[in-house]
Length: 379
Image 1 (cartoon, rainbow, N blue to C red):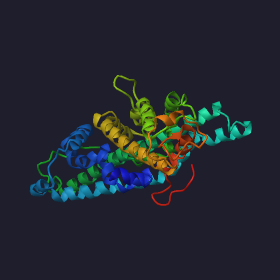
Image 2: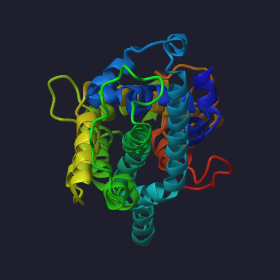
Image 3: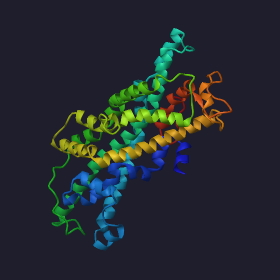
Image 4: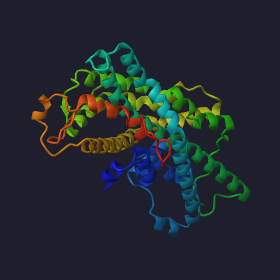
């Protein structure tokens, strides 16, 4: 099924090939089409998102019978074009995002230091640092991919909604009436046209992909340090053990009931508020995005997409355990074994933390490929 499909391809590829699935749990992608149809009635974006996620709105046949089919089809086409643009921008930015992660969570520098100090075979503090970095890189790549995807869809769909509003206002003014088939709709609201500078600033993700994820990667490193540093290098984990460790890191990053504000769920809002403004129309766009990032539908959709992405990571690591020669034995007795066999054996499904770290370090290359086709090797 879907889980097996995700195991056989990179996470980036899976997101592109399952665009409808991803859009279904991406908050503005789920709500944008309803927003296109209903913005004339003065409803807030948050209300529209909630209604869309709950499945509200007339069915296709009802729209045809009501006489609004022409406008609905036109809006649907524009909505679909916007989603394709989201996917294209995501694809173009992944290499920069991966480079930022490699710079912020740099394992090569640690390895060079270990070679220079002659500690490559020692259970040293440097190995502990590598262990933490391996887990941080794995979870950091997942968070960066999902948050960039959400960021692109939220902002592109907001700008697209304004574009459609401008087109419909112009058409209505030319006809001297409401858009065809929507005579019962409320008058078109008078909104200032977005300036080019406002749209460019609001849509740009260059700064985010070059250096903007640094606070998130730092938080991932701190969470990994709390949950991974104490694990002995020769401790043998199975896939379930690994998943439990990742879940502990996720609790720190995504929050638990009654806990402090989680860095993942506040990241996009914080980044948005830190960016400099341009003009009044840019401020209006920012206010719309703030309403989305503060809404319950957004946090629910983000959690859903993160669950799907981490399931993909679990599937990928299950492949790693199998490829490393894991058999079908139990993990219990294997925990007391050493790492002399390289962290694997033909009689269990466990790997030593030292070997597992080496695979986790390479996860960003899988999760953040250069393109949907022909990913490069390495990490």
